[in-house]
Each structure stands twice: as structure tokens, then as C-alpha cells.
Image (cartoon, rainbow, N blue to C red):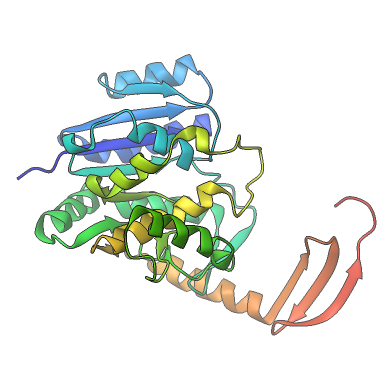
Length: 287
């Protein structure tokens, strides 16, 4: 049986369409429906997408909830019963600036984007393997990069209460561990998203500013997607293998463990050695 697939692509960083397009070519020959949400009208990109996929459907949406608000909007544009799977993709700041620790490995922004998308459609073989996994395992509910399936981000606790309250309101178990795909690119069984569709609209999200702020509704739902998958009796898995990331991420984590220099949110320069603060100075003026 061929599983019916809906692909949702949210394009915020417009030029990244040209980076994502080669990945979507790995779906050629497979019947899928492409839904594109954008915050800004760009005729050249829309025409290029139409040339790539003439049946693509476009929606202009407000810039609410980063990539999560537009995803919720997309859910309201389809009948979930028409599809077996949803592939959620979006553009992501892929500059090398800054890094975050996930699962005890440091990851910069560019690698973060690559891990997310390559685990899903990095090649035709990867995509086929993911489809077969869903076909052969009825308990598999969501696929994402195994390196980014996490419950260990330092801000998880800040949204935990909200996640559990929403799960309880949905009438599903709310006491499971909070496990999710950090970065919200995944493939999921469509019916799992029904409770999200029934509970939220894009207008529930605040207008998004240029900076990413934790503890927003979007960050709550980022975790809720994974928690809901588990609460409904499904598992989340990743099948990707990236030796370079495993080595680089571990070495960078060890370097940060030994020596870390940063400016805190209170505008203080702080140096830590083996995570022990050894120097702290209040900064003067803007940074």
C-alpha cells in the first residue's frame, strides 16, 4: 500500500527555497500534495515552486508562531483523513553563528538545519526507508533526526506545566516524559495531529518578532507534538547516521565544558572553567 502524503513547507527565509528544492526532488515519482505557507509575497519564488510542482497550493499567513503557527494554519486547510502522513518542513536560520547543546552535543545553526531535513528527505533512499518504516511498524508515530529527539533542553521545564495542562485538556495521558523533535521538522501520522487541529488556530499565536523567544506557545507546541504522539500510544524514532556530527558535536561539547565565555542575560561577562565560574564582570553599555 502506498501511504498518502501531505508536505507542508513554511518559507520564512525566502532564499532558502533554493536550498530546500533539491531535497524535495528526492520525492519525485512519489504521489504527494505540496502545501506552501509564506509570510511575504514573492512572485519569483512562487513561480519557481509552480514550475517545480504545478499542483502546489499557496497560502499567505501572518507571521505568528514562527513555523508552528503556519503549520496549525495548514492543518485547517486539509482533511486529515485524506492523508496517512504529514511531512513538516520549514526554512531555518542556517548561519554558523551560535550553537546550542542538545543530547550532550554542541550543534551550530547550519548543522541543525541539515540534520533536520536530511534525516527525512536527505536522499531518495532515506525517504523510501522512512516510508517503509511507517508501513511496517504500526506503532511508529513520528520520525525525526535521532540526534534531535530530545527532552534535555535547559528550557524544557519552563514549558512543562503548559504542555501537561494541554494534554490533560485533550483527554490523553499527561504524565509521560516530554520527548520531542527539537527544531520541528518531522514526518508524522496525520491523525495524530487531529487534536492539535481541534484545539488551536494560528490566531492563538502572538505576532513573531525578529528574535526567537523561548516559552512562547510555539515552543509549547514544539514539545506537544512529540508528547501527543507518545500519549496516543506511538513512538518517535530517528534512523539517520552522521559520523561527522557525532565527532564534532562531542568535541565541541567537551571544549565548552572545559572553557566557556559568554555574556549573560543580565549583561555580565562570565568565564567558566569546568562549569565553575572563575570570572564575572558587569558590561557597560550595549553589546
